[in-house]
Image (cartoon, rainbow, N blue to C red; front, side):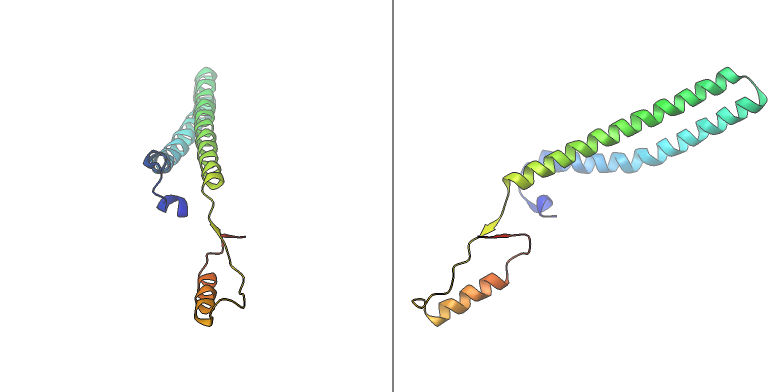
Length: 124
């Protein structure tokens, strides 16, 4: 979620949302199309020519191959973008140890700051 809030390149976020919309739209279409092709292939095997059944099975295989290829390439692209973002956008908080020279009101402020830190931040 922090990546989505980051005011970085908007192109990457638009690409992610576009791919999510495409995935949600194409997945049911590919499923229904594949099912219809296989139903037609079964009907052609029982009632008419085997050549049409083989063609429908080949169409189904091509459809799912293209769908899986697009899904894997898209997923790999977004994983690579996220890994690159994590590598280049690390948050580090420096915790200063309490010392005898710091007045007590400043020590309490330092203590409050360390309690508010995010669990994903690195302590140095």
